[in-house]
Length: 207
Image 1 (tube, rainbow, N blue to C red):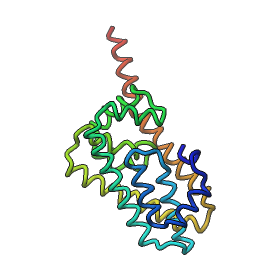
Image 2 (tube, helix red, strand yellow; image 1 turned 135 degrees about the vertical axis):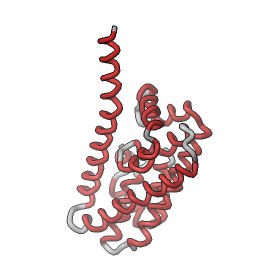
Image 3 (cartoon, one colour; image 1 turned 45 degrees about the vertical axis):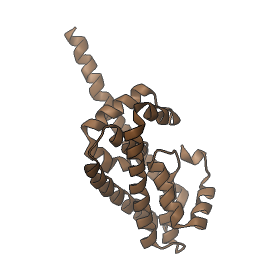
Image 4 (cartoon, rainbow, N blue to C red; image 1 turned 180 degrees about the vertical axis):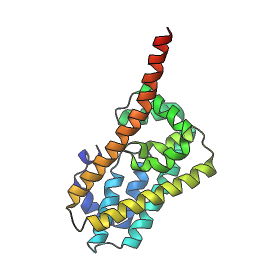
């Protein structure tokens, strides 16, 4: 979705020109709820580190810091902006209010796992922070889970791009990571939809 707004070549030029700032700010804005290709820029940062254009040990903390700050911004946006704002953000991603409501309920039931593991799931990476704020997840708990998730995600993405980028083309690497994120999203969607479908079947049988 994000790559439709900016070509891979343009993103690579931005990363080459602005370096660690591009990585940190890119993922920060995406995690704050803005539909920008933060994950792609992070992968490009790792790729450039593998080719010697950037330093791995600067790319990694830039990605972690950007992810942590972005999700914190998202948390307070959700906390103070409330449900109407979340619905408007969802519309940017063509999500209906009913779909957003289902995600909100499931998130509230599994907030810790959603914040930590949500970074590896397309869309949930963007909505985890705002949903945590909207659900009024205790901030200290969110802060800890947010850091664990950010550090884990950034370490895997940057390291993967650092090593794999020396073997396969950047475009193929980004495509494979995107496919994994979409597959994870499909699993999450099934996890939300299937229980609802089973509940509706049970109600129908009781009637």
